[in-house]
Length: 123
Ligand SMILES: [Zn+2]
Image (cartoon, rainbow, N blue to C red):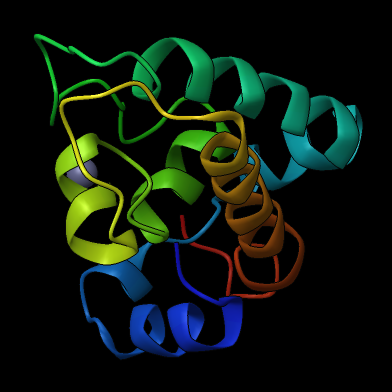
């Protein structure tokens, strides 16, 4: 786990990671549902798609569109256990503990609130 300023500086320097932004539909969804509810969905995605020790589809479990949290996961490298290892120093092969799941949620919340929504709208 990394501190947020260091992490977001590194993500901002990655052309791939910084290319993700919320499209009009994602922004409308976020606004209509509100951040707390969207983060409930994120908590659920983390628990089901990232937290288990073994994920047969790791690297492919996070769609690129369809929910603002999916976009946030790719933008912050919280999309799979491989990226969590590379970017967040969270080792694969074991279940994520509650602190790690909370950390991922905090990272996603920061991106959704401050970064994903402020970018130019992508059609
Ligand atoms: Zn990944």
